[in-house]
Image (cartoon, rainbow, N blue to C red; front, side, top):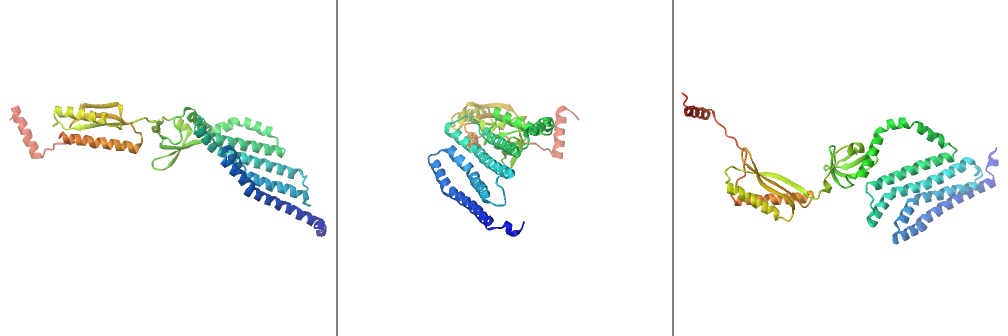
Length: 366
Protein backbone atom coordinates (compact mmCIF):
# COMPACT_ATOMS: atom_id res chain seq x y z
CA UNK A 1 0.00 0.00 0.00
CA UNK A 2 1.56 3.30 -1.09
CA UNK A 3 1.91 6.47 0.93
CA UNK A 4 -0.48 8.30 -1.40
CA UNK A 5 -3.18 5.65 -0.96
CA UNK A 6 -2.99 5.90 2.83
CA UNK A 7 -2.92 9.67 3.27
CA UNK A 8 -5.64 10.62 0.87
CA UNK A 9 -7.66 13.81 1.19
CA UNK A 10 -10.58 11.87 2.69
CA UNK A 11 -8.38 10.12 5.26
CA UNK A 12 -6.72 13.38 6.29
CA UNK A 13 -10.17 14.97 6.59
CA UNK A 14 -11.39 12.12 8.81
CA UNK A 15 -8.27 12.34 10.97
CA UNK A 16 -8.94 16.05 11.43
CA UNK A 17 -12.54 15.33 12.37
CA UNK A 18 -11.42 12.71 14.90
CA UNK A 19 -8.94 15.10 16.50
CA UNK A 20 -11.56 17.86 16.54
CA UNK A 21 -14.11 15.59 18.24
CA UNK A 22 -11.57 14.55 20.87
CA UNK A 23 -10.58 18.18 21.55
CA UNK A 24 -14.29 19.10 21.78
CA UNK A 25 -14.82 16.47 24.48
CA UNK A 26 -11.75 17.78 26.33
CA UNK A 27 -13.29 21.27 26.23
CA UNK A 28 -16.67 19.96 27.44
CA UNK A 29 -14.83 18.11 30.26
CA UNK A 30 -13.14 21.32 31.36
CA UNK A 31 -16.39 23.33 31.15
CA UNK A 32 -18.24 20.63 33.09
CA UNK A 33 -15.64 20.67 35.85
CA UNK A 34 -15.39 24.44 36.03
CA UNK A 35 -19.05 25.40 35.84
CA UNK A 36 -21.67 22.66 36.01
CA UNK A 37 -19.96 20.45 38.60
CA UNK A 38 -18.94 23.45 40.74
CA UNK A 39 -22.48 24.86 40.74
CA UNK A 40 -24.08 21.53 41.69
CA UNK A 41 -21.47 20.98 44.42
CA UNK A 42 -22.09 24.47 45.82
CA UNK A 43 -25.86 23.84 45.92
CA UNK A 44 -25.48 20.53 47.77
CA UNK A 45 -23.17 22.16 50.31
CA UNK A 46 -25.60 25.03 50.91
CA UNK A 47 -28.52 22.72 51.55
CA UNK A 48 -26.18 20.47 53.58
CA UNK A 49 -26.86 17.21 51.76
CA UNK A 50 -23.76 15.42 53.01
CA UNK A 51 -24.34 12.18 51.12
CA UNK A 52 -24.89 13.96 47.80
CA UNK A 53 -21.77 16.07 48.34
CA UNK A 54 -19.70 12.95 49.05
CA UNK A 55 -21.02 11.27 45.87
CA UNK A 56 -20.11 14.29 43.73
CA UNK A 57 -16.62 14.54 45.20
CA UNK A 58 -16.06 10.79 44.82
CA UNK A 59 -17.09 10.74 41.13
CA UNK A 60 -15.46 14.05 40.10
CA UNK A 61 -12.28 12.58 38.60
CA UNK A 62 -13.93 9.42 37.20
CA UNK A 63 -16.54 11.53 35.36
CA UNK A 64 -13.77 13.71 33.88
CA UNK A 65 -12.00 10.60 32.63
CA UNK A 66 -15.27 9.22 31.26
CA UNK A 67 -15.55 12.35 29.07
CA UNK A 68 -12.09 11.57 27.65
CA UNK A 69 -12.99 7.90 27.08
CA UNK A 70 -16.25 8.88 25.39
CA UNK A 71 -14.34 11.36 23.24
CA UNK A 72 -11.98 8.62 22.12
CA UNK A 73 -14.94 6.34 21.25
CA UNK A 74 -16.73 8.99 19.15
CA UNK A 75 -13.48 10.09 17.53
CA UNK A 76 -12.70 6.50 16.50
CA UNK A 77 -15.89 6.44 14.41
CA UNK A 78 -14.20 8.82 11.96
CA UNK A 79 -10.63 7.60 12.40
CA UNK A 80 -9.74 5.86 9.12
CA UNK A 81 -7.09 3.42 10.36
CA UNK A 82 -9.07 1.69 13.11
CA UNK A 83 -12.38 -0.12 12.96
CA UNK A 84 -14.37 1.09 15.94
CA UNK A 85 -16.37 -2.16 15.79
CA UNK A 86 -13.22 -4.11 16.57
CA UNK A 87 -14.10 -6.53 19.45
CA UNK A 88 -10.85 -5.88 21.33
CA UNK A 89 -11.36 -2.12 21.11
CA UNK A 90 -14.94 -2.42 22.39
CA UNK A 91 -13.77 -4.63 25.28
CA UNK A 92 -11.09 -2.11 26.24
CA UNK A 93 -13.60 0.75 26.14
CA UNK A 94 -16.14 -1.21 28.15
CA UNK A 95 -13.46 -2.13 30.72
CA UNK A 96 -12.40 1.52 31.02
CA UNK A 97 -15.98 2.57 31.81
CA UNK A 98 -16.27 -0.23 34.39
CA UNK A 99 -12.95 0.76 36.03
CA UNK A 100 -13.89 4.44 36.16
CA UNK A 101 -17.28 3.69 37.69
CA UNK A 102 -15.58 1.39 40.22
CA UNK A 103 -13.06 4.17 40.92
CA UNK A 104 -15.91 6.46 41.94
CA UNK A 105 -17.38 3.78 44.20
CA UNK A 106 -13.92 3.20 45.72
CA UNK A 107 -13.58 6.94 46.49
CA UNK A 108 -17.07 6.96 47.97
CA UNK A 109 -16.20 3.98 50.19
CA UNK A 110 -12.99 5.71 51.28
CA UNK A 111 -14.92 8.84 52.29
CA UNK A 112 -17.73 6.82 53.89
CA UNK A 113 -15.82 6.74 57.20
CA UNK A 114 -16.09 10.54 57.39
CA UNK A 115 -19.78 10.41 56.41
CA UNK A 116 -20.55 7.68 58.98
CA UNK A 117 -18.71 9.64 61.67
CA UNK A 118 -20.77 12.77 60.91
CA UNK A 119 -24.03 10.82 60.90
CA UNK A 120 -22.99 9.16 64.16
CA UNK A 121 -22.41 12.56 65.76
CA UNK A 122 -25.54 14.20 64.34
CA UNK A 123 -28.07 11.41 64.90
CA UNK A 124 -26.30 9.63 67.78
CA UNK A 125 -26.16 6.24 66.09
CA UNK A 126 -24.61 3.49 68.17
CA UNK A 127 -21.74 2.89 65.72
CA UNK A 128 -18.29 2.30 67.18
CA UNK A 129 -15.50 4.55 65.86
CA UNK A 130 -13.35 1.44 65.53
CA UNK A 131 -15.92 -0.27 63.30
CA UNK A 132 -16.33 2.64 60.85
CA UNK A 133 -12.79 2.48 59.31
CA UNK A 134 -13.01 -1.32 59.09
CA UNK A 135 -16.33 -1.10 57.21
CA UNK A 136 -14.78 1.43 54.82
CA UNK A 137 -11.74 -0.78 54.13
CA UNK A 138 -13.94 -3.85 53.71
CA UNK A 139 -16.13 -2.06 51.15
CA UNK A 140 -13.05 -0.95 49.19
CA UNK A 141 -11.71 -4.51 49.11
CA UNK A 142 -15.07 -5.85 47.84
CA UNK A 143 -15.24 -3.14 45.13
CA UNK A 144 -11.72 -3.94 43.89
CA UNK A 145 -12.42 -7.70 43.87
CA UNK A 146 -15.72 -7.35 41.97
CA UNK A 147 -14.19 -4.92 39.45
CA UNK A 148 -11.31 -7.32 38.83
CA UNK A 149 -13.66 -10.25 38.16
CA UNK A 150 -16.00 -8.19 35.93
CA UNK A 151 -13.08 -6.94 33.78
CA UNK A 152 -11.75 -10.48 33.43
CA UNK A 153 -15.20 -11.69 32.34
CA UNK A 154 -15.36 -8.81 29.86
CA UNK A 155 -12.26 -10.21 28.15
CA UNK A 156 -13.74 -13.72 28.12
CA UNK A 157 -11.86 -15.29 31.00
CA UNK A 158 -13.77 -17.98 32.91
CA UNK A 159 -13.93 -16.96 36.57
CA UNK A 160 -15.44 -20.21 37.86
CA UNK A 161 -12.19 -22.12 37.30
CA UNK A 162 -10.24 -19.41 39.06
CA UNK A 163 -12.62 -19.51 42.03
CA UNK A 164 -12.46 -23.31 42.13
CA UNK A 165 -8.67 -23.11 42.16
CA UNK A 166 -8.85 -20.77 45.11
CA UNK A 167 -11.11 -23.26 46.89
CA UNK A 168 -8.69 -26.12 46.31
CA UNK A 169 -5.77 -24.02 47.47
CA UNK A 170 -7.66 -22.65 50.44
CA UNK A 171 -5.98 -24.99 52.90
CA UNK A 172 -2.50 -24.01 51.76
CA UNK A 173 -3.40 -20.32 51.84
CA UNK A 174 -4.91 -20.58 55.32
CA UNK A 175 -1.79 -22.34 56.64
CA UNK A 176 0.48 -19.74 55.08
CA UNK A 177 -1.68 -16.87 56.29
CA UNK A 178 -2.52 -18.20 59.77
CA UNK A 179 -0.92 -15.18 61.45
CA UNK A 180 -2.92 -12.80 59.28
CA UNK A 181 -6.14 -14.68 60.06
CA UNK A 182 -5.30 -14.69 63.78
CA UNK A 183 -4.79 -10.92 63.68
CA UNK A 184 -8.06 -10.48 61.79
CA UNK A 185 -10.01 -12.51 64.37
CA UNK A 186 -8.20 -10.57 67.09
CA UNK A 187 -9.49 -7.38 65.49
CA UNK A 188 -13.04 -8.76 65.54
CA UNK A 189 -12.65 -9.62 69.24
CA UNK A 190 -11.52 -6.06 69.97
CA UNK A 191 -14.51 -4.65 68.05
CA UNK A 192 -17.05 -6.92 69.76
CA UNK A 193 -15.75 -6.67 73.34
CA UNK A 194 -14.75 -2.98 73.00
CA UNK A 195 -11.98 -2.91 75.64
CA UNK A 196 -10.93 0.46 74.21
CA UNK A 197 -11.80 3.03 71.58
CA UNK A 198 -9.73 5.26 69.33
CA UNK A 199 -8.25 8.12 71.37
CA UNK A 200 -8.21 6.25 74.71
CA UNK A 201 -5.15 5.67 76.90
CA UNK A 202 -4.41 1.97 77.46
CA UNK A 203 -1.72 -0.13 79.13
CA UNK A 204 -0.77 -3.69 78.12
CA UNK A 205 2.23 -5.95 78.65
CA UNK A 206 3.51 -4.78 75.26
CA UNK A 207 2.93 -1.04 75.20
CA UNK A 208 1.31 1.96 76.88
CA UNK A 209 -0.12 4.94 75.04
CA UNK A 210 -3.06 6.40 73.10
CA UNK A 211 -4.90 4.33 70.48
CA UNK A 212 -4.69 6.03 67.06
CA UNK A 213 -5.90 3.44 64.54
CA UNK A 214 -7.21 -0.12 64.34
CA UNK A 215 -6.77 -2.08 61.11
CA UNK A 216 -7.42 -5.70 60.15
CA UNK A 217 -3.86 -6.66 61.06
CA UNK A 218 -2.75 -4.41 63.90
CA UNK A 219 -3.57 -1.61 66.32
CA UNK A 220 -1.44 1.56 66.18
CA UNK A 221 -0.67 3.11 69.57
CA UNK A 222 1.09 6.44 70.16
CA UNK A 223 3.36 6.18 73.20
CA UNK A 224 4.08 9.05 75.58
CA UNK A 225 7.55 9.31 74.00
CA UNK A 226 5.62 10.19 70.76
CA UNK A 227 6.61 6.94 69.06
CA UNK A 228 4.04 5.02 67.01
CA UNK A 229 3.89 1.31 67.88
CA UNK A 230 2.00 -1.27 65.79
CA UNK A 231 0.80 -4.18 67.91
CA UNK A 232 -0.66 -7.27 66.13
CA UNK A 233 -4.32 -7.71 67.01
CA UNK A 234 -3.76 -11.36 67.96
CA UNK A 235 -1.19 -10.29 70.56
CA UNK A 236 -3.37 -7.48 71.87
CA UNK A 237 -6.49 -9.66 72.13
CA UNK A 238 -4.62 -12.19 74.31
CA UNK A 239 -3.14 -9.62 76.71
CA UNK A 240 -4.70 -8.00 79.75
CA UNK A 241 -5.64 -4.43 78.87
CA UNK A 242 -5.88 -1.59 81.38
CA UNK A 243 -7.99 1.27 80.03
CA UNK A 244 -6.93 4.33 82.00
CA UNK A 245 -9.30 6.61 80.05
CA UNK A 246 -12.30 4.90 81.63
CA UNK A 247 -11.27 5.67 85.21
CA UNK A 248 -13.94 7.50 87.15
CA UNK A 249 -11.44 8.59 89.81
CA UNK A 250 -7.68 8.35 90.36
CA UNK A 251 -6.01 6.65 93.32
CA UNK A 252 -3.52 8.19 95.76
CA UNK A 253 -1.84 5.90 98.30
CA UNK A 254 1.26 6.48 100.42
CA UNK A 255 2.64 6.20 103.97
CA UNK A 256 3.80 9.09 106.13
CA UNK A 257 6.54 7.98 108.57
CA UNK A 258 6.84 9.90 111.85
CA UNK A 259 9.85 9.66 114.14
CA UNK A 260 9.67 7.70 117.44
CA UNK A 261 10.12 10.98 119.32
CA UNK A 262 6.51 11.82 118.36
CA UNK A 263 4.13 11.39 121.29
CA UNK A 264 0.96 9.33 121.16
CA UNK A 265 -1.18 12.47 121.40
CA UNK A 266 0.67 14.07 118.49
CA UNK A 267 0.18 10.96 116.34
CA UNK A 268 -3.57 10.97 117.04
CA UNK A 269 -3.72 14.69 116.31
CA UNK A 270 -1.94 14.33 112.95
CA UNK A 271 -4.21 11.43 111.93
CA UNK A 272 -7.36 13.43 112.76
CA UNK A 273 -6.17 16.58 110.98
CA UNK A 274 -5.18 14.77 107.77
CA UNK A 275 -8.53 12.95 107.78
CA UNK A 276 -10.33 16.29 108.24
CA UNK A 277 -8.24 17.85 105.45
CA UNK A 278 -9.20 15.13 102.95
CA UNK A 279 -12.88 15.05 103.90
CA UNK A 280 -13.16 18.80 103.33
CA UNK A 281 -11.22 19.03 100.09
CA UNK A 282 -13.35 19.73 97.00
CA UNK A 283 -11.13 17.68 94.67
CA UNK A 284 -11.06 14.53 96.84
CA UNK A 285 -13.61 11.78 96.16
CA UNK A 286 -15.50 11.33 99.41
CA UNK A 287 -16.50 7.67 99.07
CA UNK A 288 -13.14 6.20 100.09
CA UNK A 289 -10.86 8.05 102.50
CA UNK A 290 -8.56 6.14 104.88
CA UNK A 291 -6.11 7.72 107.33
CA UNK A 292 -4.79 5.33 110.02
CA UNK A 293 -1.78 4.73 112.22
CA UNK A 294 -0.68 1.62 110.35
CA UNK A 295 2.52 -0.02 111.65
CA UNK A 296 5.89 0.29 113.35
CA UNK A 297 9.02 0.41 111.25
CA UNK A 298 12.71 0.31 112.10
CA UNK A 299 13.10 4.06 112.12
CA UNK A 300 9.57 5.37 112.64
CA UNK A 301 5.79 4.96 112.78
CA UNK A 302 3.77 4.77 109.55
CA UNK A 303 0.51 6.63 108.98
CA UNK A 304 -1.33 5.07 106.02
CA UNK A 305 -3.09 7.59 103.71
CA UNK A 306 -5.43 6.36 100.99
CA UNK A 307 -7.93 8.36 98.88
CA UNK A 308 -9.04 9.17 95.32
CA UNK A 309 -9.14 12.41 93.35
CA UNK A 310 -12.28 13.42 91.45
CA UNK A 311 -10.29 14.26 88.35
CA UNK A 312 -8.66 11.62 86.16
CA UNK A 313 -6.65 14.10 84.08
CA UNK A 314 -2.96 13.50 84.79
CA UNK A 315 -1.90 17.15 85.14
CA UNK A 316 -4.88 18.04 87.35
CA UNK A 317 -4.28 14.92 89.46
CA UNK A 318 -0.68 15.96 90.08
CA UNK A 319 -1.80 19.47 91.09
CA UNK A 320 -4.31 18.09 93.63
CA UNK A 321 -1.72 15.67 95.02
CA UNK A 322 0.85 18.48 95.36
CA UNK A 323 -1.63 20.76 97.14
CA UNK A 324 -2.53 18.06 99.69
CA UNK A 325 1.13 17.20 100.29
CA UNK A 326 1.95 20.84 100.98
CA UNK A 327 -0.96 21.14 103.42
CA UNK A 328 0.19 17.99 105.25
CA UNK A 329 3.66 19.53 105.46
CA UNK A 330 2.11 22.66 107.03
CA UNK A 331 0.27 20.48 109.58
CA UNK A 332 3.49 18.72 110.61
CA UNK A 333 5.26 22.04 111.11
CA UNK A 334 2.38 23.48 113.12
CA UNK A 335 2.40 20.45 115.41
CA UNK A 336 6.21 20.43 115.52
CA UNK A 337 6.32 16.80 114.35
CA UNK A 338 9.37 15.47 112.52
CA UNK A 339 9.32 13.02 109.63
CA UNK A 340 11.45 9.93 110.30
CA UNK A 341 14.71 9.68 108.42
CA UNK A 342 16.74 6.50 107.88
CA UNK A 343 19.63 6.48 110.40
CA UNK A 344 22.48 4.18 111.39
CA UNK A 345 24.85 4.30 114.37
CA UNK A 346 28.49 3.61 113.61
CA UNK A 347 31.07 2.58 116.24
CA UNK A 348 34.75 3.37 115.81
CA UNK A 349 37.34 0.77 116.89
CA UNK A 350 38.17 2.44 120.22
CA UNK A 351 34.52 3.09 120.97
CA UNK A 352 33.66 -0.49 120.07
CA UNK A 353 36.33 -1.89 122.47
CA UNK A 354 35.10 0.30 125.31
CA UNK A 355 31.54 -0.73 124.56
CA UNK A 356 32.46 -4.43 124.76
CA UNK A 357 34.38 -3.90 128.01
CA UNK A 358 31.37 -2.16 129.53
CA UNK A 359 29.16 -5.08 128.57
CA UNK A 360 31.66 -7.61 130.03
CA UNK A 361 31.85 -5.65 133.24
CA UNK A 362 28.10 -5.68 133.57
CA UNK A 363 28.03 -9.47 133.14
CA UNK A 364 30.78 -9.86 135.81
CA UNK A 365 33.39 -11.14 133.37
CA UNK A 366 37.06 -10.52 134.06
